[in-house]
Image 1 (spheres, helix red, strand yellow):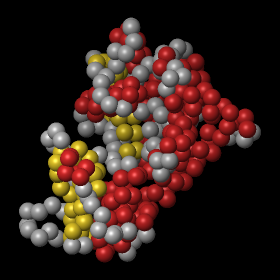
Image 2 (tube, one colour):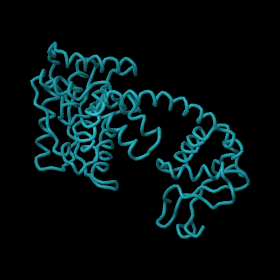
Image 3 (tube, rainbow, N blue to C red):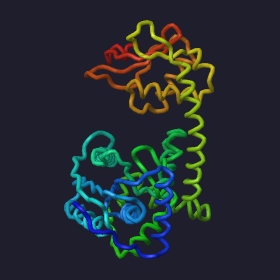
Image 4 (tube, rainbow, N blue to C red):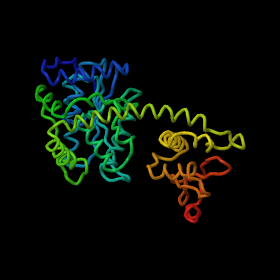
Length: 341
């Protein structure tokens, strides 16, 4: 639905800070028309208002997860807010939340699918703040997920844009006050059954107290530094992968990796190259233990059997990596055979 002309935003400190963050992001990534994932909460509402002031056109998409009674009314109010600040369009996308990984993961996957389907080729801005980044780093540390997780969320990981990673959550709340808007408070954000909620309400406040303040800022700064280091390693891994790709025995065969080439690289680079190769061959974000098991086929080879890296297309089959004649290759095998090996 079309919106009216843009209203002027108040000249106030919080709004000004958020506008500057959005302006910098739009300039950095050369974006003019954007979609904003609007929940009606403080972070996404402040982002939406600032984006309207800075971008040529903003389209708001409100995802209704239908997890609570009255979610349709919450979504309708978010659409009203989007129209009031001058979005070019605003729409509600209803989704079904189901799938593995628990409620949080299922809701996130459903939300991202809906936003991706509605973006019409434009980048999607999300309201993740510095505090969200700090929580992500802590989750990665606690789970031992490695550098890729500890370096947190990227400012732009196409199509997902996060202009507010340098803005505190308190600032978005203050911006809503300056706008005269009362943001929606999602009860899931205070439910201690969720790990991230306990990090937010218990762990981070304790860290701030023990360290005398600045813990969230330090965690976010660490994420930025690790992201810079990770990008260098990823570039080296891409070159290594290109060098290690071996010509298969038959023209129609799958891509294979030369183990001698891989073995010449440092483990951090080698595992990144293997990870990129596995994802390209159909594995879904292999965890660290899987990567290390595949890496052992290169650096600690003693004739071991294939390593399962994912599910096959048919029930009872697995995607595995095997080493033969100095090359790594992937194939689908019967799950029982994989277990026997």
